[in-house]
Image (cartoon, rainbow, N blue to C red; front, top):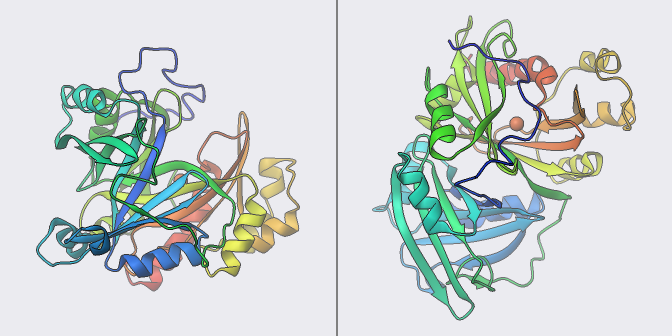
Length: 379
Ligand code: FE2
């Protein structure tokens, strides 16, 4: 195992260097799901996303339907196959509902594709252009871990809703927004000894740098362990932690994911808010289920994180987690998996100066995850 540093760099990474892959941020995250109409309803009613666009048979597609839901800068595309003989159906049969595409917003998709493929990225689709009355969007895709892809999206010549060919949905009576602002990070789970391969991929092929790393001593409980390295692009808008399982007395939560997802894939999406007390209160009212940490977590909280703005009673009531680093603190909470396979889940995060990932919470959190793993018979 390579040596890993603790909080090796909290400073912005190569912001001043010549960035061969300038990214404006995450463009959208596309989920392949068994029933996109119902999945869209879940994200609207529970997470408060607003339905803004649709494509399917009514817009001329024969093999799929896609629903686009948004809140702040968070944009999900929920896609389902209409026939069994296509790649979307194959993906769902193998992985269950899951994240297919972590799409990245760029000014030049062709250049992004050329720069990454000539550094060794595996091309999934060469640059192509979609067009309608509202303009053009150029896209290109490369492979990342497992069957997951990154699509580069160049939308500077497009004024319409989402992508050419999508029909706008102007009114959503279901959406109940909760204050979600943007995607803070997207975590990938990979297999034994594969973390460094993916770290090298993000460094060499995409020009990312390591932002933080955690070894199995940071992230272990009595039973199970994992290792993680956080990769960040130059301007810090895109962060991808990569996890792999580590040896423990029992099965790592990462192994449980890999078993049920049938290989590497995106584990969780962290969604940022600037008022986590309100956001999590609303999410709870709307039926989102969160992991629980025990009451005892709050006994040592003040001595660990010092003074914070939020009342302790509210943190306890909402079961929020807090951690502090050199620059400030952060509040976070994790949902239970949002499908029957114990795979994809969400994190809600509010950063108050803190730029780390909640290392001080790992132990309490993983014990909560293991309680659930035990209930599923997978520990
Ligand atoms: Fe996270």
